[in-house]
Image (cartoon, rainbow, N blue to C red; front, side, top):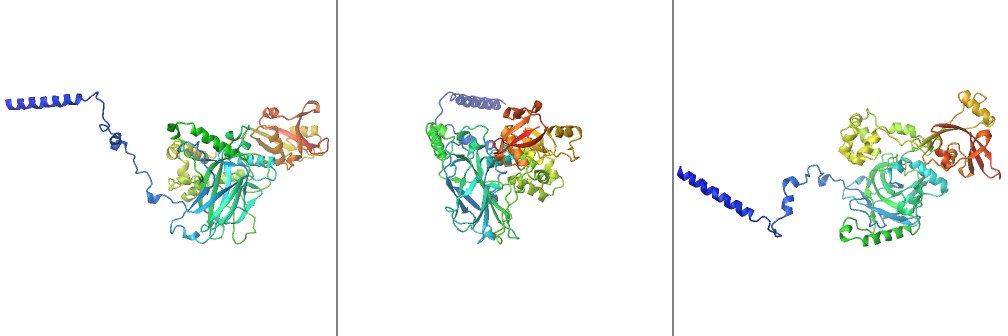
Length: 504
């Protein structure tokens, strides 16, 4: 028993000695080799779980690559999308490169493919009102296009086509096995779509997008192969060079530590992969090159004469029927759900939702989608599933007065007989949807709805007390009551050049 007690005393004294030796090192300066952060980070609790990441053999290899010969801005932070400055009207080369591995896509070997190049809005808010924005630009710049191909400088492109009703798109055929370069010219500048002109720095960004298609069994170029895009800003001639120089000088003044937070400037801009632009590809048949192409935009499925619906960002052309057909139905099959995701630019999530039917997808809450897809795409997917649209700021109803009736008679009949004229014919009113709330917008949309040449409209008046004519100003439009009803007539201008519109 005494031997056991003695052993306990020896062990206890040894532990105390070791503990004292350990404490003696506290407070001393650690050497360079005494502490290694990499050893700590190597612990299992700090390791990144890689089980959810796709394997290398699962990574999709893009079949094509598009490179625009224009330098990127040095004032873009790391992990942000690159930004490229372009001069208005200047030709810029886009190199169309075959990026396929040996044996990839043998069905297009020795055949032509079709590419559509578009200049579109980067801002989601402007994408919703694209048709309205482009119509306004068209009125202000008659005869001009937003995007053109510089055909004499281009190499390897075949059968180029443009359509007068689609000013922001061009298309052509090309052979991936041959050197191909398309030179584009962007004629719109970023400040043309801002409420107030601040200069190029405050202008809205655009996107250059390239979509490439192959032939289907009917010889039409409708089978999607690849899409890529980049962010740009367009300045007046020489403005892009000045902006690039300004950004470079700003970066030179930053400290080395601050410069590490920004991307370097590259001599060329590589278009990054993206979802295909959500419209129906042109029926482009190689055997009938004389057939006129039909371009489409995201909000308008046909190129028709604008009607009353075309003045609304949510009701453009056949917008109502298109909206109902694009809405995902609960009865949609898995294949139809996949097609809906592709059409609405959710192609990166088709694999994730590969086993979801329409009913399955519609059951997901907003929180579920944000958790699955992230905040930006989750909210966008939720709004697309619920078919949420942007409401106009003001709606007015307008009817063109019959020539046979006087203004007062027209008003009395419209108010007292349920909107019928003196001959018993009902007045037909058209809805005008206002976004900018300015007088010029009223004139422009009246011209669109009632097929009046916009350049012939001199002034818009509103009939006031005792028949006086009051000039319609921006302030008057902003004080219109929502869903107000107006009859209007046209009278020749005093000098005989143009007309005046009188709202009653």
